[in-house]
Length: 317
Image (cartoon, rainbow, N blue to C red; front, side, top):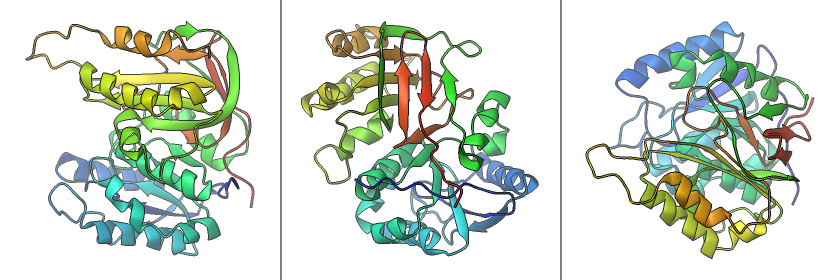
């Protein structure tokens, strides 16, 4: 596969904003405005997709409208980066409507996470595009990014420096499940958005990859179900390393406590894997986190609790 790296972002560049999933409404609409101002204050220019605020149930417009915005951004000759307004629901419905040839022709920085995971993995599978699982306009940028999150976000987009991401940050205490080190391309994201891609042409080849997983609002039995899907698909035997990020809101307080904890479920799927595995890494839907370059070559040192990029995800152009 040909790996496609977008050009790095420079002050004054044009950033396109779109909503591949749900629209920024209610509180998120106000935060969206603050997020746009944040980008303007940093010296960037902004162009919005036609359907950023459109509401079609829980979606930001029909599948055709949202795909139209995405394809327009990648075809736009002046847009250097595409930032997602938020996650939500519905991004998987766009994958058969994307102009992958246009993405190959004009690789661009793509930033988002959560529901955007499936888009990032599909773009990597179909085009080899390196993208960024990181802050969104009406979420982190609109609320005000934590200094740690901001510090480790912009350099990935604006420079060709390598980055070492240490798991021991603030209140995070890394859990070393298996020691050792491994190198491979970083793939993954939100677990519940990876599972629907299994058995499709939009799932990347995970052989030799470093897999990273996180999620929010999924009870332990759901996480169990997704992990068994990965197991039966053979992915857990194909990867060279595994990183568990943050799994937030996994217990419904109104229901009885689950018989198995998340740690117990993770242990059941990892105890017999002879690869480095690190858990409780600061990545996911939490406030303090790293932005991860999906598709980039990385080195996981589970013993030291460090995930380091081995190459930049952008080029000078």
